[in-house]
Image (tube, rainbow, N blue to C red):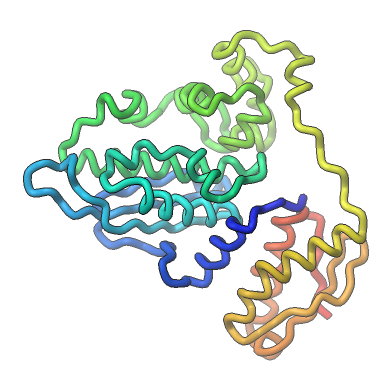
Length: 310
Ligand code: FES
């Protein structure tokens, strides 16, 4: 499925992976606050860290001086992580102020996200909260009054979605906090339900939690909330989209190392491309083809898409 990313998402992603000045991807040694969210097994994971200038007598007045992240995930996961650091620099001087940053702030900064990628912004906001909790423990700051108590205590509890390791207390909190009213909305925001689907309508599953939270939603209402699947792309539209992704995302990455790529043809789900410049003679070109180009196109379109080198 092609994702309609905003210009800002593509720009942040490109700048982050190119390591442009002012971007924040990378490890931070000995951070004052460290938090993570997601898991590599589930497809997205973010490790976020910040450092502060310590106030000599009042830790609540510590000033955040630096923030970095390491993200495993798709274009929007990396862009949302970058957005998190940018929003933090703009909106928060202290860790306590940082607690006011929400996933909606990240979405706004990114100029929007596709519904199915909202979970990337949630991952950013949750990693930030976890990092502030870590800082508070180290500095002896009491966060009661700033955070729900169950969040301070780690939300362990019954696992509702086993595919994505999502617990019941976490689901209950996020359903209310993010005003999630359908199973689809939960999947988009939290990934829960997006794997085997067993947790969606099972007793005690996502639908039951929604009903407990908001009252029973009738099947017709639930169906009405289900987003309509997008129309499949025509060969012409697919060709234009592939060209656009190559132009805006893949080519800048290859050109950084003196290479380039040429789109030769598209037949059905088969995309024929040729690596040129330094990439053509590089011993790692087969890997570049697989890991960078094909993976990126699959992520943007579908797993069925096949990249063929010519
Ligand atoms: S258990 Fe939730 S999607 Fe598989």
